[in-house]
Image (cartoon, rainbow, N blue to C red):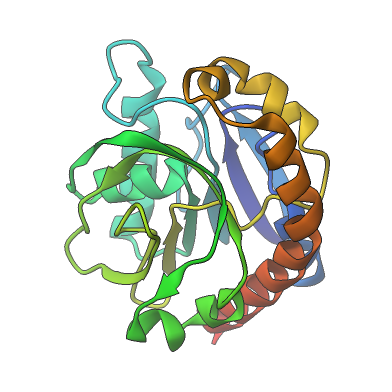
Length: 233
């Protein structure tokens, strides 16, 4: 029987990126559930073999402006309560933390660009070991308090909480390990206002994407492959 991966997508260009190939190679049929589509997060949260919650430029705490967040958080919470395999990226990591009762809040700065992680001892023993010494893409202004049962796996020079795991089946990444395999241009256009407000050097970001993207994609694929083996064992 074909196994399934459901990805909750908030903006079209923030997709599975370099994660798509290893997911397919692991025998997972990928489907996207796009915010704004009829029935977003209205299916059975336990049905997919893997749920991936992708990034997006909104805050977990902005329910009044974005009512879908409450429904999405409940969808994720039901899945976490059942112990089903779940992966969160950036906003997705924050939604997992929030669904578990942890606080998500602005850092007061924008961490946008490529830089290396500092792995904790737990991170070095986890699939994140493949990202050691690899510049990863950061693109966020919020962070989270570590949720109950979560173990911190990594930090950066600016933000302490960069990844956490809960058991073998839940992995949350504040950074974008999946990015770098395609073109940066949709990201630059889609986030133009944020980049301008943060005074990000677009030429430098393009250069870093070109320099680090392929290496990040290869390392991230190894990380994901090991994690997928872990959740199946």
